[in-house]
Length: 165
Image (cartoon, rainbow, N blue to C red; front, side, top):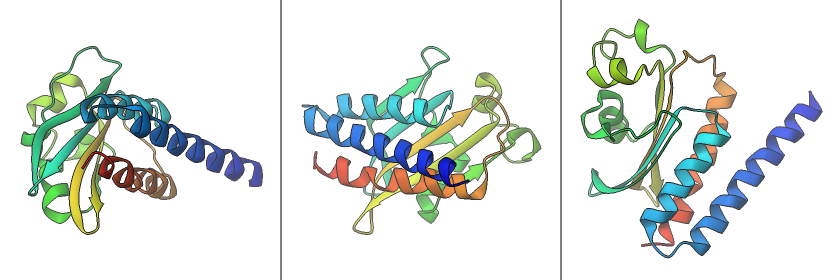
């Protein structure tokens, strides 16, 4: 138990250290977003990670996308889960899209075969600055404490993103 917790803490620290390095060494925010999206996709073993800047409570065209499914389009502007995450400024998660009556009919979930989707709004000083989307093709068994870990690691992105403001 203790070894598992130490390993988890070490992995989180490594992830955040890499985010800091990327934000300090990237000249353009687009480059940083792409690299951070890749980092988070690998860290949380998801199939797609989209990290997108928010301005005035709306998604902008500034984004980073990482996918192990080849090139994918960013469809968050039309995603009910992303829209709700922005409106509520709270994490939104669906662990089994096929069991969700609202999302199971959304074309992009069907086209990409996405079964688990977590969308987290990222705030800096009570202002939304970005949105991260983690997508898996397999239904997930993410435990609540793992969701808390993902959320905490994501909220710390606000500091890195603010360095480009």
